[in-house]
Figure 1 (cartoon, rainbow, N blue to C red):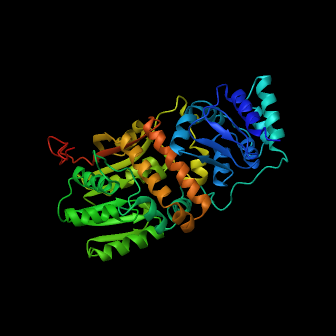
Figure 2: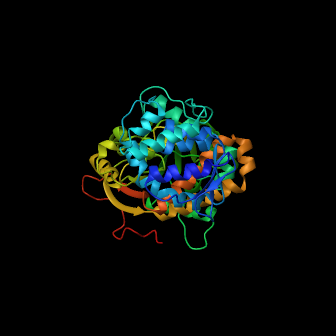
Figure 3: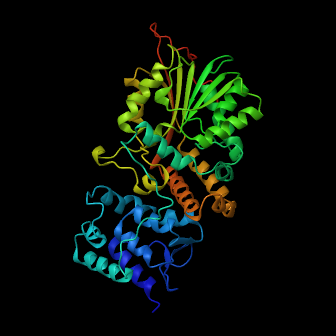
Length: 443
């Protein structure tokens, strides 16, 4: 029989309540759906079992990681066509359904559905998915965690899962800048130039002066520390929980002859005791802190600054949920990409910084810049695909390709944002130490 794709297309339209936006190709070679454009390839029947067992993003993602679902054509175009279905329909219902983790797949799916046609469609999917057995997730790529969320030990595990993938892998994806956060683009910029411009923007916002002390929280592979020491003649302490990042950063620092001005530590921000620092940069790190720990994070950084000390907090944000109690990180991202990562609305971040004693002086939104950055990373990953697979694994490379492409669309469509918040620890006299006309850093 070669009718799997037409049957799947009909079932999908019943369950989604909308026309299928992309063409699909099934494991039996059959195809169905609108012609032209990219094709969603369901290469193995087991993919259906994964989707039934974990409806929503996680089931699809597990099938993708295992290589059971692929794309023939442009991944961005395909994600763009299905984005409305994934982001505006099913995920909201799935996230708000509190069913047992090991509930039977068909029963768990049926709990989301109310009309007889939908229940019949689920039964038909179960038939197509046979022989039935609940498939385990691809074990080599899923994160493993133990202990309370955002404890020091568990944070080390989470950071290691994401960043200790291999420095050579990240070189292929990030390019020579080795910066893993949103770049700052201008017309005609290259990725390397845009990342340098972002680092310089941070330094100028902080008003760094020769001889000052800078703490770089979540220093990554040392790019911010190197730029600040080399271009602004400051003394930098960079901290990270990734041992691989620290080894790489120290090597770069030694090669540039800056070991006397840059110190890289494997250290939790909660253990830094050698303040005061004149300025603190936190670029793409606060997403790992967690909402329950965020006020403590802000107070810790506040205590490490003297009156007049400056903080630049560069952080991804999400839009507020109508019911904040229902918010959960995307299951795929939590399981495979950023374990225990949490995104907060911009207003929550600003509020916590103010409650910790900071005076917020400037907020700049860089949402569109992150879409451009992620597309550049995906292009590098695809260009170096064979090497990236060799340096990690096929599953890990597929994880990074999917999450970066989907995230690019999230920023481009306004589901996600990224903001630089400049704050100061006020002095008793109310002097901020900042220029009267603040935005002297230019375009």
